[in-house]
Amino acid sequence: MTPPSSPDPESGPPARPATGRRRPDAVPVLSIGCLDDVRTGSLLVAMPSLTDPTFAGTVVFVLDHNDSGTLGVVLGRPSQVEIRDVLPGWCDLAVDPGVFHVGGPCETDTALCLAVCGTPGDDCGLRRVAGDVHLVDLDADPDALAGQVRGLRVFAGYAGWSPGQLVGELAEGAWACVPGSPDDVLSALAGPELWRRVMGRQTGRLAVLSTAPADPTAN
Figure (cartoon, rainbow, N blue to C red):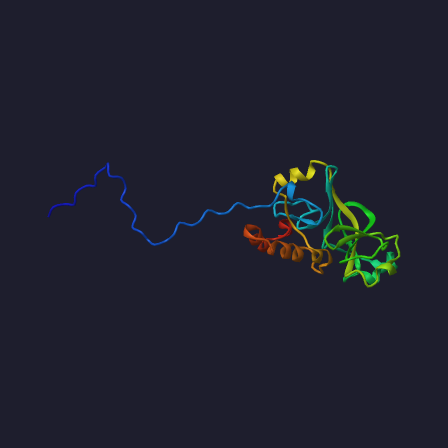
């Protein structure tokens, strides 16, 4: 029997038979935003790579952003301090749970209040932050806001970044910058639940991250 002929060494490897499978698309780049996306009313969402215990797994609502730096409050971090014990006049306007929320590591003995209100009246102690979210003058008369606000949250302290600090953290992939909404400020969700809710409403790979641990140090 005649043995099979040897393949021509210059003909190259045999072609693979067609399987009908499409070549998988390239994995899209994870888009987390940049400093130009940071503005009042946006959210800074901690990425899983951020392991600093102060901010791991947090969602920060941006209150101010300019050449002097960035200011915001951490959402969804309730404390054990009742509003009625410190600011009794404001407790009836606060949404549940009616406690102070830890807004950040800066000046934690300072109270800062955010309210959601569509069209506030004149001289009611509100200053617009973004959309329907307003800063509340806690020295004003709370009765002036009765029937005007959808609810409010009181925070102890805030989070702050000096000029150039946040851009470095964004470049390192520590934060994603995404749009915020008034419902985020008043949300009853806390900690990992709020983080997953915000990430889950994003698109692409950011949405996929909603299934990851919000704080990897908790594993």
